[in-house]
Image 1 (cartoon, rainbow, N blue to C red):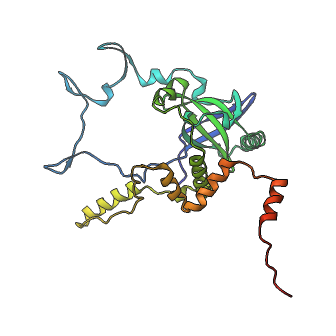
Image 2: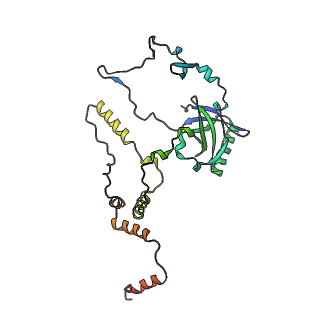
Image 3: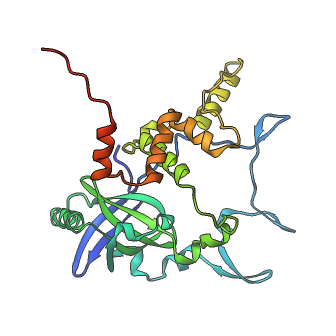
Length: 296
């Protein structure tokens, strides 16, 4: 069964319109979710929609309301909301192109895939042209899109054989970080400590592989549920041990690097700076004992 499109419309670049379909790039079905249960009876708790002084109400009698002042609402029907004529409801108009690195990662929100509309050969060709142009220029296109009744900034970029979009947060939705960093001390980092940390980072550097990570908490929850169903004790799920509070940062970094002696040499070499050359090097070599050679 083919996936159902989350949104259908068009990407517009100047006078070129490309019919497309948008699909979620993430899935949450595999995650465990809980229901609230009445413990004495084991039955699921249901929530009725009620009006104080009236009681339960029918779904058709419910409309959306915006509170203009305490207890007073402007009422809007779904039809009235749908009648709002916004071109962005069916069009992603690419109005700006930027380097992806220019966008702070804190603005990125949720990813989606964009596919060309089925059966439209002209649209598919324009789709491929846009993909290749974005690849060649190493740019992402910015526009706006209405999803589920909300307008979003979106970034359109190449993804494998196709295109993806990521919704972006508006500037007023992102807090300034400075207010949270007031307790960071104004001190100069020790060169040897930084050298050890750099060595540790280099040793652990590798290409990103999302399969290298697993959700230990989700595994533990699933094991607990299975054990309850099977009426047995849950098996322990292995997870990394929490480190003790760091008392001696130098010692902790040396232990993390693994070779205390080698780590100290690395840090010391960085602190000392470039090696001496010329006369100093020649004098050092003259003092050194001659190498033994094996007789022929």
